[in-house]
Length: 133
Image (cartoon, rainbow, N blue to C red):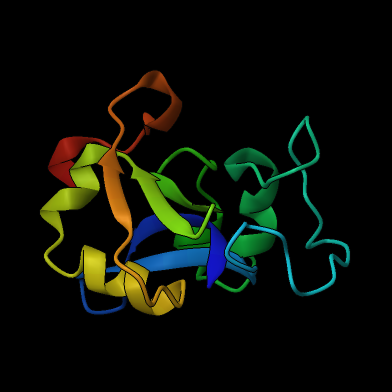
């Protein structure tokens, strides 16, 4: 199992793909691999990752058209693991991508059925315009 962050970005062929940052954890969400800078928790509480603080590192290997965008330009979400259950929180627009759930299962090595929770709150708002999708 892995927990972490993801963004839905364009792929090379005009489709979509996940850009993810994740670390291995146990069924309670406790990391099972060491936190080494820059891969250390960066939230205020020091117990998770934030999209804003992680974007530059995660996007570093992407083409300039991707990495030059703001951290909140693309729709995004996170995978949390607690008490043996995985929960995926995400901007509802990501649901339009037919490959979304399969990509999450693969990228985050989720072997139990996660709960998918579309979150239309301000927290997951993004800058990219609908006509750009």
